[in-house]
Length: 180
Image (cartoon, rainbow, N blue to C red; front, side, top):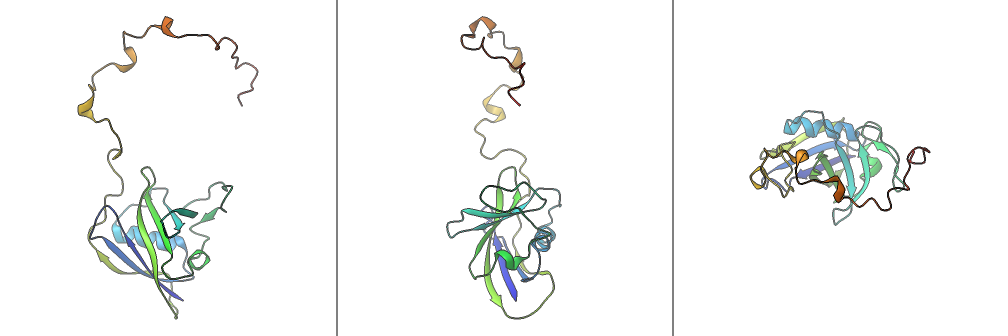
């Protein structure tokens, strides 16, 4: 079978990627095709996630082997073929390209056609992809202008060790190795 898979970004309105892929291609082949299309280096712990109609994450397909979760099997991109997880039109998936801030492309299996092909091929690219990595946390509430960066935070003279109420701490002992 031949799949048509489309990706878009919520960060860039006119961005779109369309791929044609063999149903026997691996998620690693799709991953490499996405990176090549957008010009991102292959130096992040990217993942694919299968999603439901509300874009809630399900099965993860990781770049490298990770520990099994209690809910899903460990699946790696290199060992997982597209047809193992993608098998019906309009099925949704996420491609997380910035794991630090959970930024992703939203994907959909738009068509399944009979036929044969090898690998993954870029059909269309519209717009410019968002930057792969953000320079700063977009959700951070504190910016450089909100605080004096020259303040010696750890050398604050207002700190007084006597202000700490030690009641309840005297019974703690880490000598017995019970913490590990």
